[in-house]
Amino acid sequence: MLAAGHYSAALQAYSRARCLCQQRLSAGEDVPQWLPAYGATIANLAHCWAMIGLRTQAMAALNEALETLYHYDDRVAGATAQQVQYRLLTQWLQLERCRLHPIG
Image 1: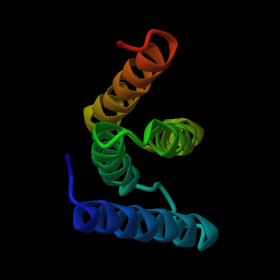
Image 2: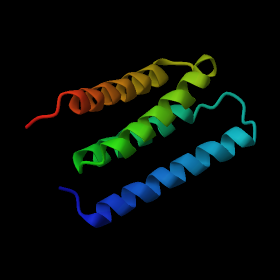
Image 3: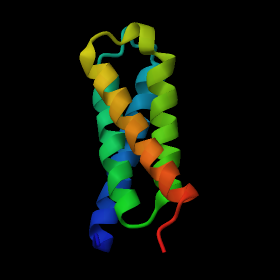
Image 4: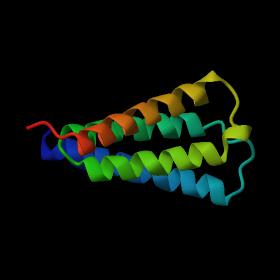
């Protein structure tokens, strides 16, 4: 299990990534090439949260990242964006499966 310090660090990293994403979107940056990195960051954090039992927070983060990536899908070119979307969706499906079919 992750220590409280790891959770706190993950939460801070998520907050920074989310804030940076919103700032860049608000500033109207063209062709957001940084979006795949944002999605990968969220995927990592959601994995950490899921590992310590915070599935609701993990699902919310994954949903937000997926919505952002899909909204800008036509402007984010390359296999990297598709790989990140696939990773996010895979994690989302795994969490949903755990919710629908809990072990124990």
